Length: 40
Image (cartoon, rainbow, N blue to C red; front, side):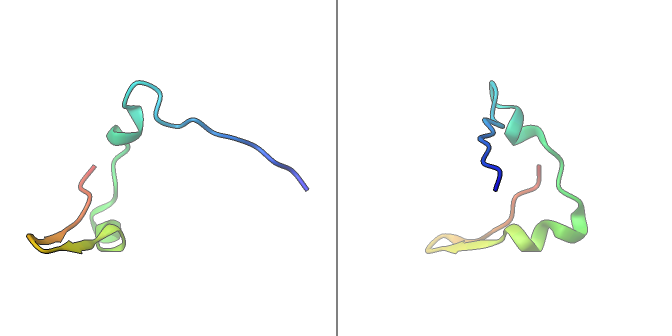
């Protein structure tokens, strides 16, 4: 099979990929401080 490597976060661009509002719940995680979801 194929193997590849992707370095997606080239100078913080990974953090600028928008997440559709209806998909944000899929990124949720809980901490002692509360529930968080990624917005971008």
